[in-house]
Length: 145
Image (cartoon, rainbow, N blue to C red; front, side, top):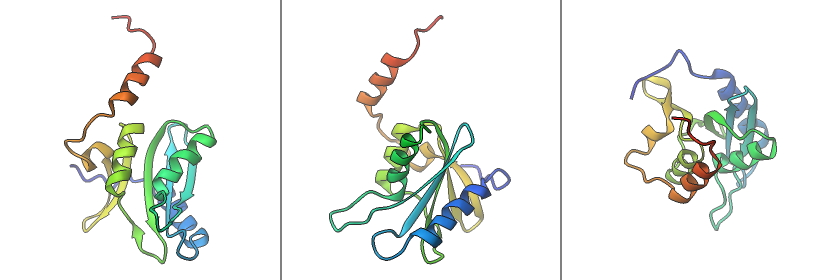
């Protein structure tokens, strides 16, 4: 993986940080996520913690983006409340993000600073969600080659 600090979307980090600081109150909402769609829009969301599990902020973000007509996300970041900073997605979120947006970049924090990582790099040797791929192939325009 290549460290890419010069192209990190700092506006996106600030948006997620602002939501984490102002909307994550109490035990039910402890993480915020922000994504930039390919058309430049920023969408934000918070997790919905529940003792039965509940969706992470990244999963809520996918639904929120769709509700706003932003179906093609380019970059995502998650930020924890109480100034915890950038938090990488959990395994479930990595898989869902990869399934929905295979070319997505994820902003992660490391000891070396911030970097943009292809979501596939966060989940090596992953399986392909075959049903999703079949549906995508059916809706794709016919090949002219």
